[in-house]
Amino acid sequence: MDRSRFRSCWFCIVVLVTCGVHALGAAEQAKSPWNPWPVGESQPPNFWPAEDDLGPMMQSRRENRAFPASAVKSAANYDQATATDPLFKDKGLWPMVGGKEFFLAESWPKSRTLVWAKPGVHGVPKSRKAGELGVTDLANWIENGKPATLPWDEDTDLILPPADQAYDVSFRDCGIRQAFRHITVGRNAALNGGGDGTGRQIWGNVWIKRGGSIGSQGATAFLGKRHTFYRNDNDDHGADSQYFNFGKPDNRSVEIIGNAATGDEFQIIGCTVILGQDSRLCPGRDSTPAIKGGTMVLMDGAYFGNWINNFQQLDLTVQGNVWGGLPERPLTRNCVWAVAYKNHTQASFTNKQSVTTKYTRVVSIWLQPGSSLKSHSAAGKKSGHLVVTSMGEQVGNLAGRALPGDWTYGFEKEKGDQYPDRLERYTWFDKLPRGLDIAIEAGVTVSNVEFDHFRKGGLLPADPASAKAWTGVTFGKHNLAKPEELPAPLPKLGNNGSY
Image 1 (cartoon, rainbow, N blue to C red):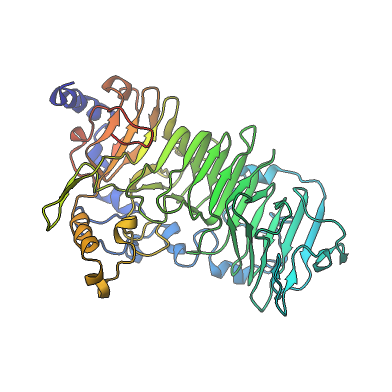
Image 2 (cartoon, one colour):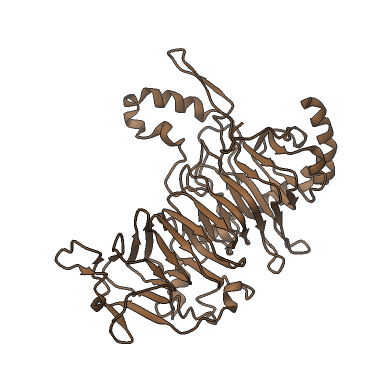
C-alpha cells in the first residue's frame, strides 16, 4: 500500500475521531498529574512535577498512594485489622474504598487461622541456626490459642503479627504445598516462599501492612471463585513475587490496593484485575506479560507499567481488555498505562570500529482481534480517561534510572572506561527519539483514550476502515509527530511483536 495515500485517508479519520485533538488546551493539560519529559531530552528530569501540579495520586506517592503513612498513624485499629477481618466499616482504614468494589460483597465462611507463635523470631524451612524456628514445625503456629495440629492449605488463613524486631518467615522449598486463603503480614514481618517450579497459591485476600513485606520465588497464583483484594501499604518496595498469575474462573476479580510489583512477568487468564484508586502494578524488567481472555482495569489515578523500561521486547500482548474505570465505577480522574519506548528499534548503530548493527523493530503493545482499549468516564466536567503514554526516568521505575537491559549491565559512570563498547552504544542509544508503537488488529474496540509519546508511524491499525469505529480518541502534546502522521499500515508481526 502507498504510505502517502494511507496517510491522506488517515488525516480525515483522525480529525473526525479526535474532534479537535489539540482543543484540549494548555489548561486541561496542566490538570493532568502526568507530565512526561520534553521530547529529545537525553537526561529527562525527575518525572514527578512540582507540588502545585500534583493530583491526589502524586501528592500521596512519596509516602504511599492509596494509604499514606499519616493514615496509618490515625487509624486506631490498624494493627488489629487483618485480611481475614478487614474491618471495612472503619473508614479510617479504608478511605480509598467507595462502596462498589466487588470484594466488599463477598462473605467468607469461618476457617482455620494459623498465627506465627513468636513474632520477631525468624522462621526457616531447614538448616536452622540458633534463634531460628522451623516453619514446618506446627508447634510454632498458634490455632485457637493452642499449637496447631494440622498444616496449612487453601482454606487456611495465615497471620504474621507485628513486632518490634524484624523477622522473616520463609517457606522457600519447604517441601509442603504453599497454598493459603487469607494472608496478613504485619509491621516488621516478612513472608517469603515459593521455589523453582513450586511457587505459591493464594485463594483469598492479602494485606501487607506498612513495614511488612512479601516475596516469592516462582509464580504467585491468585485462584478461587471469589472476588478478593491484594493490599500492600508500602511504597517503592521490591518485588512481591517473581511472577503473578491471575487465574480466577468465571471472571472473578482481584483488586490491587496500594503498590504491587513482580520481578518478572505476569498473566491475566480469564479474570479481572483491578488497580484501585491511586494504586500501582509494575511488572518486571524485560518481561513479556499477557492478558488472555481477561481484563485489566485502572481506576482513578492508577498506574500500570514496568518498573524498568522494557527496551527489547513486546510489553504486553492483549487478547482481552484494558479499561480505564468500570461502568459502575466510572473515572473522575485520569489513569495511566505507561509503556516502554523502543528507541533502538528500526535503527542502525555503527561503532568506532566501523561495525554496523541493525536492530529489529518491536511494537510496545499488541492488541489482538476481539480486544478492547477504552475508558468508562463519569459524566460532566469531573471525568477522566485512560492515557497510554511512555515512561520517563522515574515513571514506574522502582530500581533507579531506566537503562537498556544488558546493554549497560555493570556500567557505572565512574568506571565507564572498563566498558567502552557499552558506553559508546548507550551514548548513541540515549540520544534517539523515545517513541511508542501500538499494533491494533481488526476487530479491536478503541474508545475514549489518549495516545501520547508515540513515534511517527507508531500507530498501527489493521486498516483505516477499522479505525473509523474509534470514538473519543485524543492525542497528547508529547507525540513525535502530528496526529495525521502517527498512523501507518499494520505490518505482519512475528510472535514476539517484531517486524
